[in-house]
Length: 308
Image 1 (cartoon, rainbow, N blue to C red):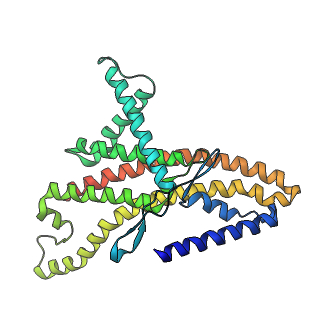
Image 2 (spheres, helix red, strand yellow; image 1 turned 90 degrees about the vertical axis):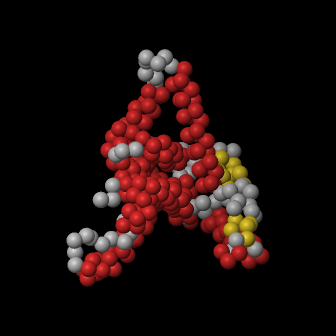
Image 3 (tube, one colour; image 1 turned 135 degrees about the vertical axis):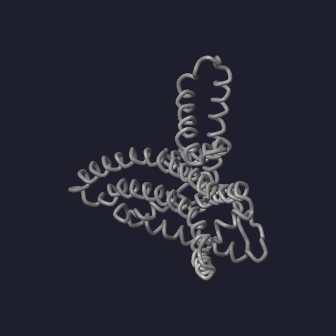
């Protein structure tokens, strides 16, 4: 713990010294890379319109051989909680509106739009990919979709940030899906059938060839199980990080060229238009990546439930 505290103090001192040097050099020393990283990486403070709010720190827990872990909330943790509360509040209000609506009439307005999305996922994504018993998986897949979508959209609002741009967040979501997939496979196929998805040996072959296939295919099957959550985590993380990096890179070019008034106006107008277009594209990407994560979750569940 002492080493961690010393490292934190040294890092804070170096950051303060770097900021003081940057302030002395003026606008021509604008650090575009530092600005981009400041938005992307996790932090112990939350930026709000009236200033930065410092979050609690120093919640150290000693895990023995695993070392010491700081469980203090960070910016991305706060944004995750905010997204969860927002999703819960919206659907609680929508559920109340649907219950109060007449039974012979469809809900109106926003409630009707959300109901259409829910029915689309159930009828066009979950049921075709999972098959029998698919409806029991619909609540989880819908929860994943709307939770990821909300976190993605929070990264596009002022003073916000995208928690899905953190590999730890996307990895945790992918691990939840991995557990769901493997438990579903074991419950559907039984222990012996589930082991068949790992130790693969085709029937009807010579024993020697079956042994050879078992030796070759078993590592491949294990790797295949691990690459699915890895692909889910990296795809979501990389797409959200790339989009935010591009937007800030384009927007920051105007500050980089402030020392050259002859080209500053043209660069600023051009990069502003491009950044606006990318921002609109990011809204589409936010929906697309949430949809892909939910769709692949249903595909993976369907694959293991119908392993044959």
